[in-house]
Image 1 (cartoon, rainbow, N blue to C red):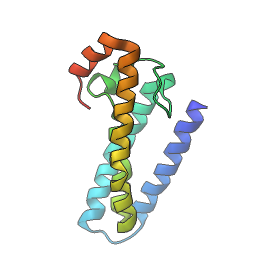
Image 2 (cartoon, rainbow, N blue to C red):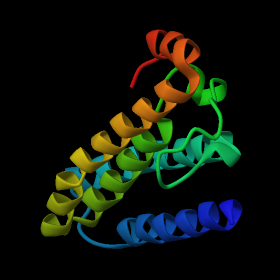
Image 3 (cartoon, one colour):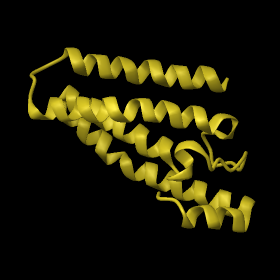
Amino acid sequence: MGKVLIWGDVAFWLAVLVAAIVRGPRTAAWVAGILIATIAFPLWIVARMQLGSAFSFRPQARGLVTSGLYAKMRHPVYVFGTMAALGALLALQIWPVFVVGVALVPITLVRARREQHVLDAAFGEEYRRYRERTWF
């Protein structure tokens, strides 16, 4: 199911990005959104793939991934996924939808905190050392 889920997500956000590229006036917001999304989107895919079987929707300690993008940051799926989504929504220039996207960012922060608590409980000192040498 994991690979199907990843590629389903990829297909959805790729469709949003393509719609953003094709749609609407070529404003500064459009350029910024396309730039952000085209940089963040592939990094999000890489992060999801590097997470592998440790990925879950609910916080679970399936494994502590500390290599690849995870060697520098604890939550690259959240960071790059949020950036890609907001970039695509910015490029679409449908402002109420963009505002909703921004308003959902705190939910991502809460999810990251919950995940950190689960990993800390499961991996203890190993996770705490990992947290000290990584960003968000």
